[in-house]
Amino acid sequence: MGTILSFFCIILVASVLQTSTGFGFSIMATPFLLMLFLPKEAIQINIILSLIISLSLIWKIRKDIDFLLIKRFIIGSIVGVPFGLLIFNSMNITAFKMGVSILLLILTLLLILNFRVKPTRIRDFIVGGTSGLLTTSIGMPGPPLLLYFTGTDTEKGKIRATTLAFYLFIYLISLITQIIFSGTNKFIWESSLYAIPVVFLGLLIGQIIFKWLNQRIFKILTYFLLSFTGIFLLIVSLNS
Image (cartoon, rainbow, N blue to C red):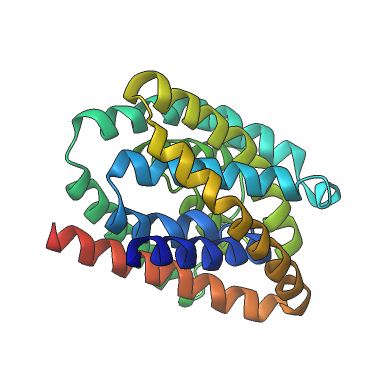
């Protein structure tokens, strides 16, 4: 009973963040789901529910999507996805998580210190590739996008719309790839089905919160999420 309640609470909070920011679900849900379920189960549940959220929101926010950027992200992610699957199936996931957590903390510190990145075509491809790699390896495509968008001072509406549009592609490809090469099971799909009402409740709350967020609060929330994810992943890795 405790596990079920924890699962629903994680999904609710993550859904609110995803809807209000465009990137919160995988960043918030994945570390906690990894505490409740096996890696394959946690990652695939995260991917399925993230797809549902993106599909539910994309039509409403389509006018804010940067389609040129999406195209570059997608091209880059196609290269990153197989490498992420290779990491998931053969490498030490604990060591990989530790490396990701340290990198997240360093980059977050740079952003807080007002580090800025000039967007370029090559960097767009690299961010997409890194996001694809992280999606199939640990189910977290958000950090590279979030770091890049924050470092380039992108407007919050554009961040949310472009990120959600990219998620539609990367999560679908990652889910298909995971199922083909790593398999799936009944528990994953049943858990995802039970969580759908909680997801839609989170969507409603998140839409209200988004209207209240100004750009400054949005940045503060971004720094908090990145720092939290980095610290949490590091703690989990050290205790594994």
